[in-house]
Image 1 (tube, rainbow, N blue to C red):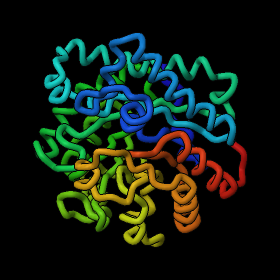
Image 2 (tube, rainbow, N blue to C red; image 1 turned 120 degrees about the vertical axis):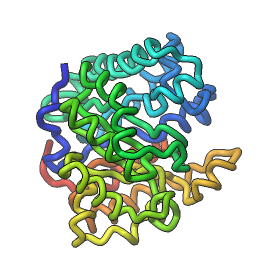
Image 3 (cartoon, rainbow, N blue to C red; image 1 turned 60 degrees about the vertical axis):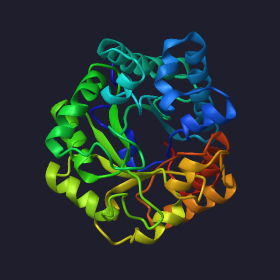
Image 4 (cartoon, rainbow, N blue to C red; image 1 turned 180 degrees about the vertical axis):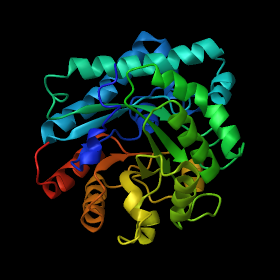
Length: 323
């Protein structure tokens, strides 16, 4: 049963951590092959399930250490029909994987409930939605109605589970985000939209980040609970985050890359660029000081437990009230 679907605790403004870059961590640090960068395939194997458990438990430990809330994001960024078909999954197998991903997080929440999942330190379960196509390139472009139809099946499955919310990560054009928000609204699920940007702070389509937020809010009567930025370094988007802008005020979360490289450079890289965890933590703290509504903090490509711990260390003192 969902615990927080009716009232997401992160909306109260205290610090909530998320995980780092799950795919880059599993591939480069754990040596696990992920076809098409699809972490959900690990759910098919006992060893894969244990690797996912180990990964998420490490973030539960950080939340416990720093006394923060935690959002557990399901490993289902690639678990949509097109990618699943390419990976050889049947529709039933895909549906089962999405359910199993949430069940895994539900079990973890119960397991650590006396430590990092108490009433004072809540653990929120999020069903992760990824783009239909490439995360960096807006291919397989859909209009909002097509996107709503395409993503409604996965969102509908999450609605039948213990998932508290939906998070759409690495959205690279506004129409797909609109469709996801509408599908979530139909399923009565809270939804968060996370856009990715290029080194100029614009979406891969060239649309401005704030214009994309306005487009989604206008088309959905501001249905998303909030917005996030993911899969870009803070240097790439900090300049467009003017504190007084009402669209900037809708941004509550960050899941930045550790690397300053562009998406094209990351695609071509043969080694992982983990950046500087302490520097990234300090950048998050500066952003929090400028934009006090930002309270959901995690990482994306190249980040791992070291980065999230540094983010917690740098940012927790900026939150004065106890959870």
